[in-house]
Image (cartoon, rainbow, N blue to C red):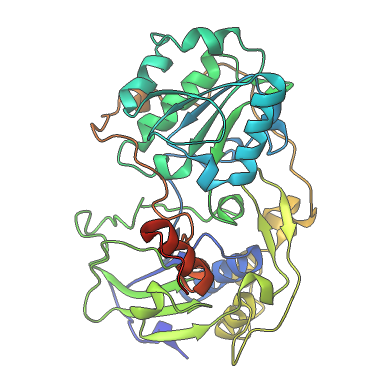
Length: 395
């Protein structure tokens, strides 16, 4: 399949979008494919919040670690519902509340977390008051020995995500959440490998495909779009002659808009590497083989890549774990922090003065039981959804 010859000439654009459940091996192979066949193309991450600086991984991971969050004696939740987004982390916070007397407060939607907490409001302006040390809860954070905060990646994807991120960083700096023996600044990701994608440099350069040619209609110039397990895509206005390729395993929304569908393998059907929200490297094993002609995403992409000529350029773009992310070889480990312990070094001054939306911080999840292509294809999850919405237990 010689796709790169279909749109020769000036002005063609090729983009790839990767979903939050793509393993590291496939991401590296896609990177090589794009650099080899479409050097002007861009690889975008579906779940990336443009407000987060990806230069240092401490800006986008759960730094206190999942087990370590229970040691915090004061925790501020920002635009997150850990009971639905990360039940294990919520259980750890609950353990801290019960055994250590952790004081928990939230800025966002009202919610039931299975432990007492202070609901401070739903507006970003409340977050600004805390950052400016003008809120009553500041006294709690100020007296805490190991204060922490948890901000949802979904909250950082808002239009005012830059302001939210910088308010959170200011709070972390002002109240001593970042020390040499404690790091309480936490970004919570729902995606199984969002952190891993950011680790190897998959970043949304144009913040939502806002290309230089057409900032108001970001998809207008796209001629080839490769969707790698990317399904939750909204407001896509593709041109009529855009060729869409979807590679995935459950035939969800991305497959419905594709011209070509390549069957892939789910995480239970391949040996693959993932990095969770705390930055821990994890490895899956094959439980059973993919049905039909399905292949692992990395193998399918290698088939598209074809034989690579031994040229200097090819050797430079042939990325491996050893070259660009050596920590991915240490399964079960978390890379040590390289954070600079200087007050305010990671805060963007312009972000503090950025416009704040009047919209409240909404719930990050509407339906706990259907959050991705796998759960949306599950009969059991469909029954759970029916029960929670209608109270109907009939099968």
